[in-house]
Image (cartoon, rainbow over all chains, first blue to last red; front, side, top):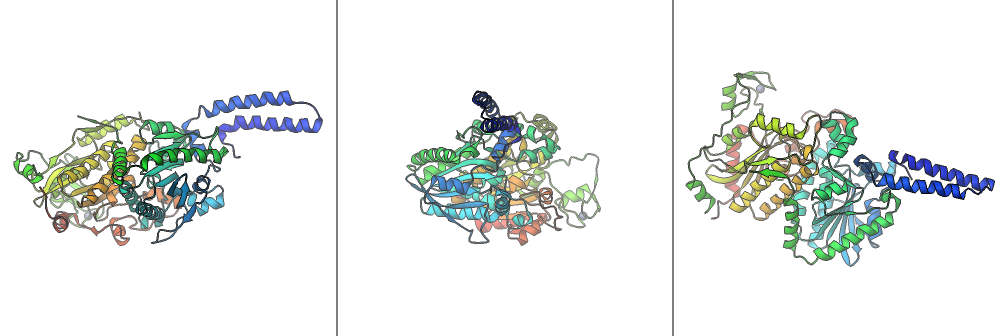
Length: 317
Length: 287
Ligand SMILES: [Zn+2]
């Protein structure tokens, strides 16, 4: 498992434990009490690190290459997941995936951004940065869900919509804008979970939901800390400060009234145990669907509009 | 009371819809495009369009109101909505200072002017973004004022016209600025379902979170000649793909040829185009 820079003290302790274990095996000396001591230290250090994470460290966890991806989570939550492809107009964007599946007693349409776990897969998935056809595929599947009266569950994990020449030519702005508008009008329940990076409009483009959750180490932001640092601070090295200032962590996003709750992760991050994460998300989604599915189409629309209508902090008078 | 009665009853307009150009003592201005030296007054009389090369200068929000609305008909709304620094944000400058400077410079609380007006005798709910206020960036106040302008169209059953000029979301308001995209676009969903037209006039520049929400969602998307309209700014794209961008990329004419806007309209014909679209698309007020 790839360790992040801030986990280095922990990594050193793990290495030491391994060395002692090896020595003990090869030399017949009983080092178990020594090993136990270091293991206790490691546990204490682990608690200390993960309970005092800086926002910039949370960003690293949110971007960890072994973090569970949308397709894997669909399959863990839904035995019969079947993927569907294409926007019926231009192509099939591998950085947004979707399909049908059962979760508990509900038949749902799944949607999510898709990243890879290695360079090859990441290149194929464009690092989870969709082009317009990705948003249009998502829209097509959501319209189908609306027609067939199926709830929609979206998993958000993108650095942002792709900034490229062809994306602009094919109307990246229009594709996202249309999704924002259309999602507000669907008469079926929509639940969204930010599972990694909630990168700006590219994230919100599949995130206009009745209920929005943050995985514990997910982030949601109007701009990446790096982008904010280079534009506002005029110094790319200020990204850690920007991560702090932008208030992008799960507790902040809930505190600002954007998300409805935090879904806990295993200590150290979701990449340590995908099954636990899938179960936690599934439990939350099922609990919301059981409440939302009793509401009428109009109630669901009104509920969703009221949620977003209330967002904004300003003075009046 | 219907909106028509309301317009008829209210006192004759007292709002000064002209805005002083913020360049005191400068009677002359050089065209950005052809370098022609133009007399300020001639430029203003020509809708801030260069008399020689038709370059469209950026326009102050109230000048736009004066250009588009029937004389004296504009009634501002939600003028007392103001921004707050709820994140305690500070970069090279604190958000509080940026707000103060922008308010002093523009004499308004935030980057949108909105209200009700008549256009060729028909009531419209109108909103105009002010690029000179922090780059027209969309924070809570901009999102709220645009949303209320759309809701006013819904309540009064009158068309909504928004003039966009914005660099995108206001980073100093963090995630809350992003959510204004969902709020404004959601309001348009309701307006659309009620069968009321929405016209978006995309002015220079319209980028980022503004273009990826209400700016691109017009039943009619009109763009001003030469306006920069994009999702990602040219600099961001150049840094990502590491190559020079083609000439005219992301300009209004580029968007027209790629099917993203209905028409590119010369500002001197904009009022008439809007009047025609309103006349052809909406059967008049229901009281
Ligand atoms: Zn000129």
